[in-house]
Length: 481
Image (tube, rainbow, N blue to C red):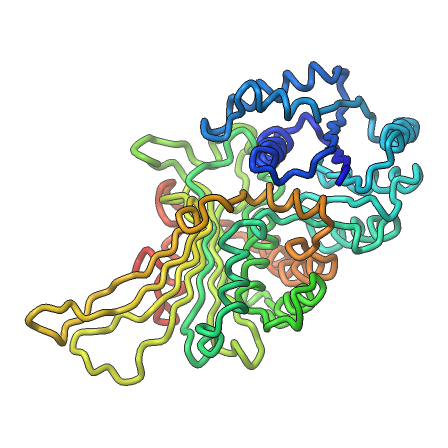
């Protein structure tokens, strides 16, 4: 299938750090359709050859196993092209249309890897230039807006130019193999569905933890914060995948209809419940991997006295018959003890224990990073002289070992889906806006809170109040169990 893939923001970090390596891996895995062209557009003057050399140099920064050989890069570079564009100039969009019309590819994917502030300008210009035909798709990178109003404005402009089925709002967490296997686990097997409800599950924890600080992105991060950066999109999308009802089909809209129902069922926040059920924090100086690291306020480009949160822990509930009364805990933060993204489903204890000294409940751990996999934690007899003693054991599924030839990265999967027109792993506009509706009362409450975020030491698991948040329900975070 001949395709054209255009990256707006073609020299930006996202393009060369994530998107180009993902496309190269797709080519290496023989999954990238033949006959494709990849066009990068940006403001500076470059020739095709200069851009190819730019990408070659950047590939030296990816992990060694993902670097191309000279022969591989030559094949990949043959697809790469570059155009200078001023995104405010209509004539430059006319030139882009001419370039795309040269061969009239079956599919043209326009990927907006730019600041979200440019999304409306780009989409309006695309519409005026006639770059919105039925064979064209637009991919919008997060964050889509910084509040409900800005998200609605972006969606208003996008929907005025493109049909909803042409708009691919990307959340790369949905491309992770473990998340895809969450659907298979729930709806492809009979084992868990009878247990996937309030009668059997005590609580669900979603943790998105990073060891890194904000680095040189302090000015960007300070206008975003952990709630907008991770909870509003990644964490809520994972929650919907965990809590949704079985869709009627594997069709994209059937899946997204069920996810939307979950978002609408989330208990709304008030100023009182924000203070009670949310902990926000900001890292101070500490030690990570044995090395001292600065606090957030000492990072490059962070304004003095900033009250931006780098950590958030949330307790919420899904108010429907399946989940009523089950706490969902969402947690994310920078400069935490380790890089670890996972979903933990904690099952209830047996109703009547007959084995002495046994109090540990079963749990299912869905690992998202640094590795993908599933762990089912059970209790088993040790087999010794005391046959009444039980010990914890786990059944461990490592997806890399189980499917060594089938593994693809998140961006690789999502780029291939965008080219093929598969919307299942992309976010619909009403989902996105509903997530903002749920988040906005939190942002409003924080604006009027004179206390600001709680401090925590870099290299820890966040403010102690986060542990107290779950302990109030008689629970503990996974690392404390």
